[in-house]
Image (cartoon, rainbow, N blue to C red; front, side):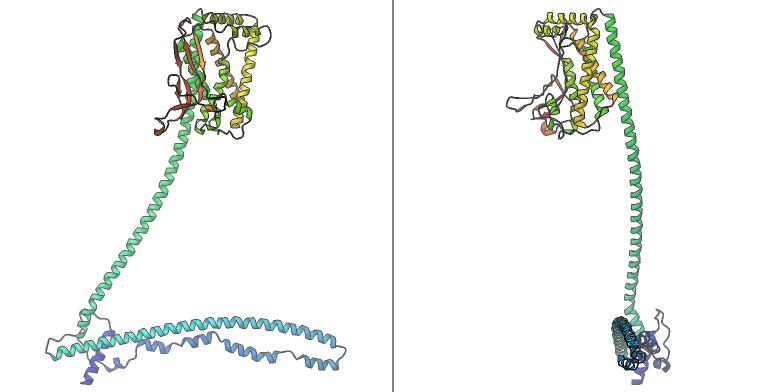
Length: 535
C-alpha cells in the first residue's frame, strides 16, 4: 500500500512538471527513471563554477601581494652597511658611493610609495568585489529560500490532492482525477491573469494613443500659433498701411478744403465792393485752421512723450498761460496739449487791435496808441479801424508792414519750436517750420478779415488762473462755448462736475448784427475745443 502511494505521488509530480492541457491524456504508468532523474536546476548549479571561485580567479590579489613581497628581498639593493664596508676599502670613492646610495634610497622610497598606492587601489577594488560577492550571496540565499518555499507549496498541494483522492475513493463516490481538480482550481487564476494581461495591453494602447494625441495637439497648437503670428504681422502691416493712407487722405482733403475756401474768399473779394464775409465762412475758415494745427502736431509729435521733469523755468512760465497745473496733464492728452501750445501763440495774433506788423516805434506807432484810447467807441471805432487798415494797405507803408509781419511770424515760429523742444526733445525740420509759418500766416489773414468786418467778433481762449494766494482756480465746463475732445470719462465721473483742464483751440463769438448794432446779442459761431477733468 505504501509503495502504491509513492508511485502515485511520483506520477503526480511528474505530471505537474509537464505543461497541462484542458484535454488530459490517459495516465501512464510511472517509470522509475523519471523519479530518479535529478532536477535541471541541480545539474546547472553543479556544472557551473561557484561565484567565489570566479572572483578568486579574476582578482588574485593575495597572490600578487605575496609575489610582490617575495620579490622585494631578492630585488633589493645592497644595504648601506655593505657599501660602507666597501667604502673602507675604497676610501677615494667613498663620497661618490655615498651620493649614489642617497639617490638609490630616494628612488627606492618613490618606488615603495607607488607600490603602496597601487596596493591601496587593489585593496579598495578587493573590498568592492567582496561587497558584490556578499550581495550575490544574499541574492542566492533569497533564491534558495524561494525554492524551498516553492517546493513546500508543491508538497502541500500534493498532500491535499492525495487526501482528497483517498477520501473520495473510500466513500465510493465518483472518482475524479487530481489533475482535473487542480485544473479547475488553477483555471480562474489563469483567466484572471489573461484578463490582467489584456487590461495591461489595453492600458499601453490607450497610453500610446494619448501620447499620439498629445503630439498631434502640440503640433496643431504650434501650427496655429505660427499661422496666428503670420496673420497678426500681416494685419499690423495692413493697419499701418491703412493708417498712412488715411493720414494722407485727410491731409489731401484738408488741402482741397483750404483751396476751396481760398477760392470762395477770392471770389467773394472780387464780386463784392466791401470785404464783408459771412459768419459761416468765418467759422469754416477758423475750423479749417484748427484742423491744420492738429494735422501739424500729429505729423511731428505723435511718437513723443510728455516730460515736465527737465523743463526750464521759462517754459513752465509760458505753460502757465495755458493751465495752472501743467504737471497734472495726462499723457494720453499730450497731442491736444501740443495743439494748445500752438493755439496760445496764435492768440497773440488774434489780440492785435489794428494790424499785424504795426511797429511800436516810428511814425506808425501813434496809430496803435490811438486805437488803445478809442477802442470803446463802438461801431465808430470799428469803422475807423477798417478805414485805417485799408489806408495802410494802399500806402507806401505796406511793404514795411509786410516785412514786420513776417518778422513777427518768424519769431513766433522760433518760440514755439524752442518750447516744444524743451518738452519733447524733438527738433523741427525745415519743412515742419515752413508749415508752421504757413499756419501762422493763415491766422494773421483771419485776424485781418475779422478786423475789416462791420460786426464785432471775438476769439476767446479759456484758461485756468491762480489767485493772489497761489491757489489754482479751475474754470467750469460751459457746453454752450466748449466742446470736450478728450477721452470719455468713467461712469462714476458722469455725475461729477466737469472742469476745464486746458483749452486746445479758441472759440469764435459774434456780438450784435451784421452792421454792428445790438451788441448785447451774443452768438457762438464756433465752440472752443477743450480737455476736461472732474472735481
